[in-house]
Image 1 (spheres, helix red, strand yellow):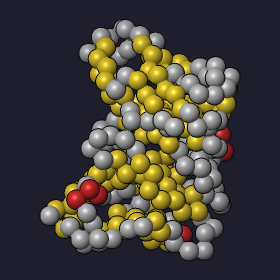
Image 2 (cartoon, rainbow over the protein chains, first blue to last red; image 1 turned 30 degrees about the horizontal axis):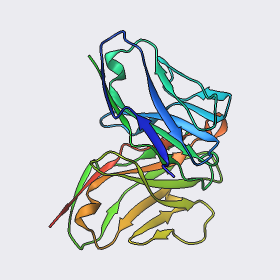
Image 3 (tube, one colour; image 1 turned 135 degrees about the horizontal axis):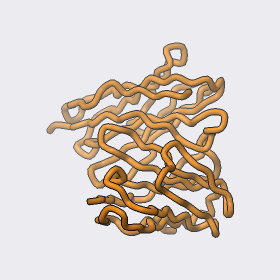
Image 4 (tube, each protein chain N blue to C red; image 1 turned 90 degrees about the horizontal axis):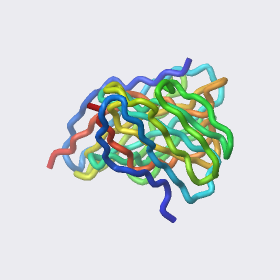
Length: 115
Length: 116
């Protein structure tokens, strides 16, 4: 049981490049989320999914796309990287929504720098 | 809208002493929960403790306990007998309401440094 895994751990991009951050979980969780963490701020939700085939926007979705073709995987795509997307990205999963006692399990994070 | 406030950007505590990390919140949801997470320098987010708004007693998990004062809308984390390994960022979080129930709203965090 690996929990939530994210790849890569570190990435440097040039402005305008695209890439995909990978996230996978092996706990059969329906809920998966992507957050970004910036200095002096808490985590902010980018996109989330409540099950395979269902995704929705969080509070900072611009510049990012997601898809959920399987329960296990929830990749985050940066369409055209910008310096404002320099951040640490966390993927999280839980059995149910976090409005009840459903612990969110976080991946180790991906540190992205856009030059 | 939900709001979480952590007013202590950083704190020091001596090893083996207790420390209280403040968290106040605002919510329109009559039934809610509060989460505390720890983020060590290695970067991962570690769930510490949860308090439900209708729980009769303050939550405790080992050396972690919550001083939950519902009327004051505060849920302070108390760490007893601090250890060097407790040095980390600590985040308080609350679920969204209405159309935002599928997310946690995080405070800005408190950086705790435990001194030997």
